[in-house]
Amino acid sequence: EVQLVESGGGLVQPGGSLRLSCAASGFTFSSYAMSWVRQAPGKGLEWVSTISGRGGTTYYADSVKGRLTISRDNSKNTLYLQMNSLRAEDTAVYHCAKSVTRDILTGYYHDYWGQGTLVTVSS
Amino acid sequence: DIQMTQSPSSLSASVGDRVTITCRASQSISSYLNWYQQKPGEAPKLLIYAASSLQSGVPSRFSGSGSGTDFTLTISSLQPEDFATYYCQQSYNTPLTFGGGTQVEIK
Image (cartoon, rainbow over all chains, first blue to last red; front, side, top):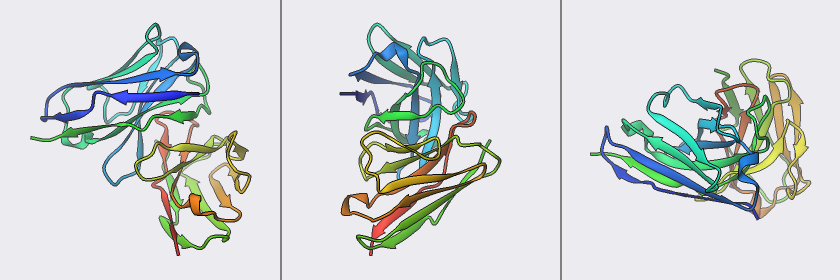
């Protein structure tokens, strides 16, 4: 059974940092690209970033480029999101999601999602 | 960026009703369109990929159609467990973008 469990969320001040983790199980982690998708309170879904299965290719939303960094440790079956220079508008539940392909190809989509971890940026 | 517009933003329906949700892309995305269902406090669940392919384990009352810029999600006979929010999402290019969501409520 595929499981994705996020952790690391919490309350942080504007300008602060946080690192989110997503522990994956039930599939061959290195064979699939992985993404972070966020959802602000009461709002819709917003794609944040995707990393290829081997970690060599990454993509980011313009709103987070230069501040958030996606990475993965295939030996630990874990996906990460390093969040720096956080802003109030980064407040959201952050979901990790498994892609259906190893590489980031046209038409890729996500077949499993975690329940998410809440990040609140506030003073 | 490709803009995804869903309509309606919400609807009220009864168990057994046929429900249709539409999604329009700001440019052609071929058939690179996916549909997700989300219930409060839960993770999104993939229903339909590539516009019309039913994800394994999803009931056959869900179906998708369309190509280019106009797409439709249909629930043929609404069940109590289908009351949720539905999102379309394009995967034609990065950034991946979602529609604003359609909340399906009980009439």
